[in-house]
Length: 249
Image 1: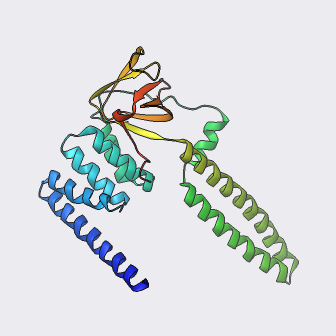
Image 2: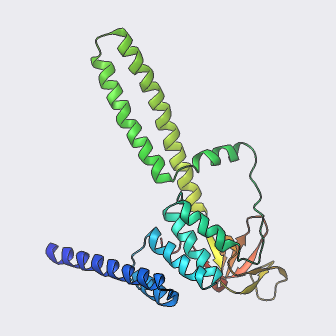
Image 3: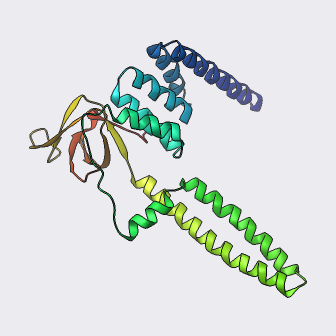
């Protein structure tokens, strides 16, 4: 049974590599539609990577398909938050949007904390905490077996600093994980859609949105979702009008 699983895993990896390479060759030839078929065949087999979403985003961008381009760049950015190429290409794709939504900057102490913790992914903060824990253990061993007062003082101070570092890293990891779980971004896929004041067809239209615009989902009622824009505007939109970025993660 174990051998069968290994063979299946190996075969899947070969299929991924072949489809990815076929997609890359099609892209290089300018056959973007064909490249998309190859890349999306990989997604159908539940295989995901930042590189795959990045390449898909590039294909859709070349075809001037705003919503799919932004959607795939955003998905790639979730997997590699600090990747400069993904960030730059996402900015280019966002320039194709019709809606010009200005983000309302956060102020106060909460902004200071978020600016600090968002410098790393929550997994990175967790690894920093683990490494600092090993450093603390090493400092403790040297402190315990140290033969001179100066050596003991140095490593005692080192232990104090590493404890503070561990606390900050753990807090940052928890804070970022909480933000990640509560943050439910989505992309408008309809060319133009109405945002309602209530979750019904007959409610007053609050404003209109166009494809490619990023929104944040907070609540679902029947076939409507409550959304908020980056400028703070809120309303209800049909579930079919958007695709949630984290849905397949």
